[in-house]
Amino acid sequence: MRLADFDYPLPPDRIAQEPLPERDSSRLLIVPRSGGEFGETVFRELPARLRPGDLLVVNDTRVRPFRIAGKKESGGSAELTLTGRQGDGVWECLYRGRGPRPGLRLELAGGLWAELLGRSGGEVRVGPERGAPLWRARIEGEGLLETLEREGRPPLPPYIRRVAGADAELDRSRYQTVYAEEGEAAAAPTAGFHFSPRLLARLAAAGVGLARLRLDVSYGTFAPVRAERIEDHIMHPERFFIPEETARAVAATREAGGRVIAVGTTVVRALEHRAREAGAVRAGAGETALFIYPGFEFRVVDAMITNFHLPRSTLLMLVSAFAGRERILAAYRFALARGFRFLSYGDASIVE
View 1 (spheres, rainbow, N blue to C red):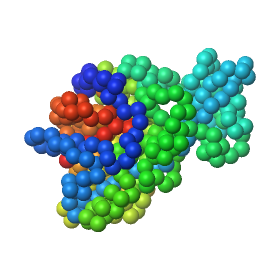
View 2 (view 1 turned 135 degrees about the vertical axis):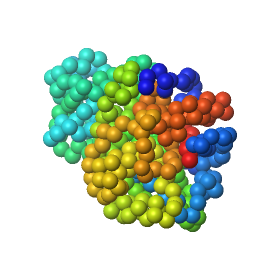
View 3 (view 1 turned 90 degrees about the vertical axis):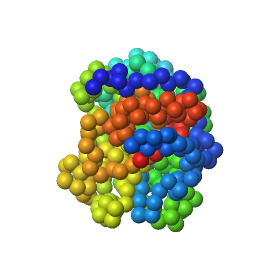
């Protein structure tokens, strides 16, 4: 398939720049996979869409404040966003500032130092047709993660364009799910943003199960697709862990005739990767570079909750694989016409 097959016009003013005051007050687009009219409701009404015996599977990874300010030895300012570990003391990162080059040293906030080693080969999408290279950097200093927790800022996506540091405390709480636990994610599993503690309690009372897995979302989720034939694209690998209780819950739900509902594309990739690797969703840790696009055969997921994704993105391709490209593009046209908010801080859809 061609990359252009997954394009659609997304006006910049439709990209949500701030979260809504209440998580579960976002809108929810209802997309029946089999056809028929699209519907809409408020996310807090999700229990009415689900059935007793359904299982929600969420990604409980924690987003770390991996964006940290620095200063070059020449005195110029710069900034690093750490996007993933690559070895002992070596991280992949996005560099913001003038004159990046191998050997460039930065004094980071909190007494850390960084040295750029060279480009990693990765790339981040920073505009409709524009990408920025990722770099490898050696980070020196004691207590990196503790320092980042004090001095860093949330690694907001490149399409959220605000003054640096604006609303940092808001983003620390809202660029995170309420059920986040451990992990080292450089980007959030944003479909989970819409769940509040009160909504989770209502779902449990309605007989809907909840299971967790962990996939450390990397900045590779924002990587541009450069291949004109999408089949030639190579995904950025990401680490995952599926607990034993989650594997058992998925198997029991399927055996009882309930639906396995993935909250976000990261959950879809982890479950479907494991089903191919092990023949079923089995517990364990691993790494996935699974690329899901139309023609993919789903073995586990029966429905998914997901936000609205960028044109020409692998996330849009995944959702198109689940419900059909034309069906999803029609849903996006409907959502744009109805004033839905798009991308990370935007509204949600349920594809069922």
